[in-house]
Length: 580
Image 1 (tube, rainbow, N blue to C red):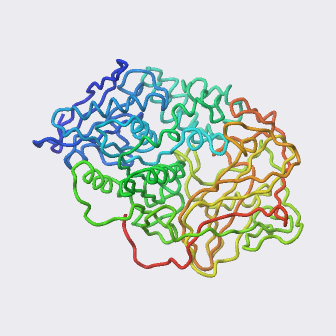
Image 2: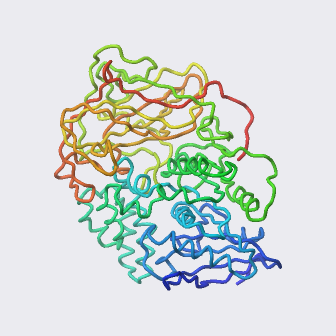
Image 3: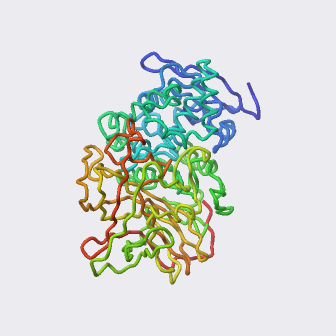
């Protein structure tokens, strides 16, 4: 098949070391001479090649590359059994070396793809394939336990379940010829399966049991960071990655923290920081658009990743000199709606700023008196008390998730409904006196107690504009039994005050004069996370009909000064806009 000056060879066999055959589409420009290779390995159909955010492989081919789009093991045209992450290191190595031997190529290979297709690149790179010259992993984490499946010990219900059903189960059922089963899954998803998922324990849920997503139950059975996860993890193997990487993330992507950590780790270990570049926009996991949730971030937020990747590949695969000197880090500042550059992330000019929680014991909802102030408490103030009911969890309002907004709430959203609840504590700063750049991670030190052996604590950082509209920036969670270790959970002693550290998340936001920051504290965010039943039951077996109410106390007194730490640089407003 030909078109647009590009020839395509379909379903080319890619042999793996164990005899399994994968299949790829090879796109070639109809020009002479040897060309470098771009490899895209995906579980989402090579003919689609993630064109929901990228240009078609033919576009890259027309710019002087042999582009190989390959289905991973057990997906679409490829043979074998799909078992997420398990085969991607070895299969990726074999695929890269195979692509380097294709006729009409230079033997130099670059890779690209986002989400799972980002993970396939990183796992392959841990095997150090000789032909791999550079990568562009986008929207992908550094840890498949804490970041993909779980966060702070809590199961990422909406993302993981909807991803398994929409992106994996339905295509696989169709591939097997089980059309009616695929139709049932699709219909249930359209009916809002995420809102009904608590009707059964996950281990018994008929929708999941009939969908053929057996790996999901493996993930739920392994709810601690045990060898099951470390065997496929990147954390212990990232040191083996020594190729130039263009890391791409989004402030409302579920994997952005892992993207930032991985960039930082590879930059520290690498020979040259220029070999590790980071670009973070205001985007969701998908799509990468100027319009994100209820926000329009302007023309500078429009997706220009293909052009960025092309310059990256030209540099490392064709030895093209950069047009201009570029800082290793580009990040989009929301509120300013412009790009900035820096030598590192976080930017070197930012510093930590602490805000302490204050109230008279009635920080419940946005009608309460919760405040964030720079001065520490000086007395034995009353704790804020609320009751968490697992059967009536706080609903998710936007946030960081994946992959379809219809199944998993994501992006910037108004917090008015959430902040009107009495099981949400609301603490707000005074209006800022001067424009302040928020750029870096936020952490919450929370002194809290519950009357149960387990519970959850959630924290959300919110921007409040001059008119009082509150929009989420980032958030985090800790499942109390994982407070000390993700490997070895321990029950609570009911009534004991515990100091929790909650990673609230990383962001870049310009808070203008007259605007404020807000912290929401609660014990649920559903369906982003599964609702903790407060008994210590695992996510796999937890039954909401066995759940216990929990009375929660948050302390902010002289001996137990709960406080939020953010990273800021004051006086950073500018008029010039700098494109990515």
